[in-house]
Image (cartoon, rainbow, N blue to C red):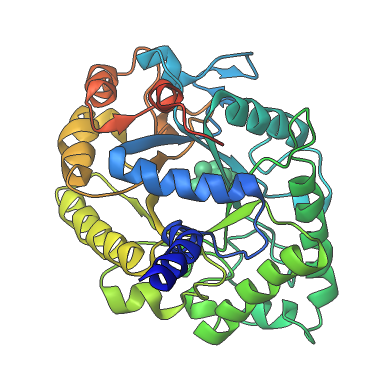
Length: 365
Ligand code: BMA
């Protein structure tokens, strides 16, 4: 009896450890592990709201300390802030959306210090043609940047710039700030050079594998969690067709735009697939981008988005940017926008989580 008891007690830490989920990177920093675990916890508690470039600009304003269109409308910041690295690879000081990278670093730190979550996308230029991320004139781009390809060295230079940026994300105490990195998104469509008709599933997966291992093993970066994010998904098989592997990915999501009558049903179908995959794999689930022309459908926040997502365990839904000079392209509401009242209803609903909600949870980090 006694031996059995001692054995049981000795095994306890192992049992406890096995019960705590860990991210895909075996060397993930303590803070990245915490972020991963907190996200899994949060997706059981509610649905976080995210907004791209939220602190950088909004309708009619750029770089105003403390300002946010979302906060102007509901009095609170989003729980998740999205940021974009496109043109960092060129060595530029600001992104393709004209946001200075030094400022982005500052806002990532501010968001982390406030208790929020950061996710980073990368619409990187086409390394083969020199065109934009949307230049799909060649099907050789992914092949050309893989090891042995003619543009591999150039792609490594791109990654070096990303690595330097990621390594600059630190708190005042010098701790690396954990963030989600979501490159090569919407690859189930064919509008980016890494898209479905532009490379084979093997090449797409190899691109992920090389990139993540380069950042982890060569650059020693272990504060990133990686997000796999398709475009619209018609069925479950296609969702995983280009999935690069559980050892590389921490979050499974998808981007889905629209506001027409079919949107809610399509969103529900996609969320069903993603939450099922997430559960099976023990990963985080999210709607990594969603949106509609809100100006034409003010009920989008409540009837379409919230009621469709309510039954699911999803960590967040993020809407895209509010360009300062093009309010017709805004995805989040802004002060005076006709959908603002509905957005406040969305904000007040117990299902949704904004920054103050997660601050109140006092999660250990
Ligand atoms: C797109 C648009 C572009 C932008 C790009 C990267 O969907 O918003 O204007 O440059 O995302 O953020």
